[in-house]
Length: 110
Image (cartoon, rainbow, N blue to C red; front, side, top):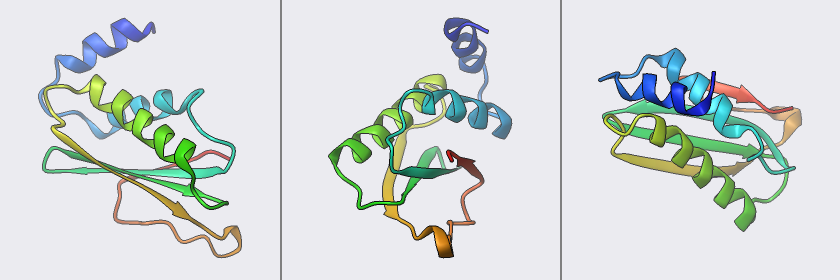
């Protein structure tokens, strides 16, 4: 499905379905992730999209910019629903991976 058709369908929805947000997030990560990203957790509540990027190295400005770009891509698919975002980058030890389980979706990147 072309980007414009996908976005058009999503814009018609009042409250987005979880599967649609997950699909949007997967699409948004294509070509956007940085080499150190291991996973991205996504959650939403009260019209706020919350993204946490988990990295295997100390986050730098490229990582923060990539997370911001991913958030922007997702909210652009749902302009009538999301009104704000919360974005984080967290360093994670792959030996003892602890992801924020309160967020509804985890996209593994490796």
